Length: 382
Ligand SMILES: [Zn+2]
Image (cartoon, rainbow, N blue to C red; front, side, top):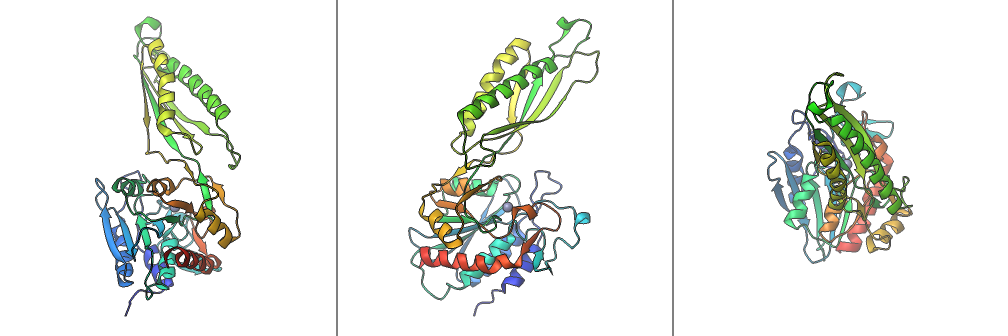
């Protein structure tokens, strides 16, 4: 007799188990509390489970839970972590699932512990019939900070199935494409000296002036070469975000830092972009006698694109009545796609409620999600 709790209890327990991931170490938490709950429920349902610790990240792990076996099958994937929160700006306790106005409030309700609970609810339906192809429920770590959970899966080379659905909040619309994101920093180191004699130093701020020009002309070149009308902003973007340098008007500026973000379209290669930028920076460094370092501030998110005619995209379009479209946020989709799976992003709730106080999942999203997931499991695993 299975002791797997009701959907409401699963939601309550997952929301009640903090699992913030953050690049700031003092806010970062383990996700093992969530992983162990999921592991217990899924093994009770008959899934075979594997907890995959993240190398180099103590207290972090992915969970791979598999029911049935075979070369095809379906992955339902969600991340176990949440973003940090500002408790004082919430009207409810972020860790207490609160039912109000036909909504479930709580940190992670739509982004995206809710989806994982719903996926398990959908799976309950299939535990007493033998599956012809595997159903894999995948719960990842650190999506909100580094995507190192998904990265570890891509490196390990599994799980492998034919299809994958990542249940990020899209209002149950299938998503087949998103941009990537690179957050980078340029550090220019020159030589400080008395302002009265320019020959006494190498001015990092003047070098930065040229670097800014190079980046803006690089952006023009990218935007001329790449467009995709499926996106609301049809071109790759490069935003100059902040700049810090120098100390006093009467000193030659010894160092200057810039941070920028670049959002490539699907089909643009991150390494090629970084190389293109470095090629433009090198001559500036030589001209000004400074050193210029271009480094990533965070691990990049790859752009994602699945064929609009793929089996899963078309099936999801049919089930939901929505044409596949694009979103402006990054996901783990490129990592699952790299494992060879026909991948879409589609889940309950709205990204508008994610990453902010009073995050909620509208209750009327739950039943349709269970239904759609059951149909997908029935189609690809039975
Ligand atoms: Zn998310």
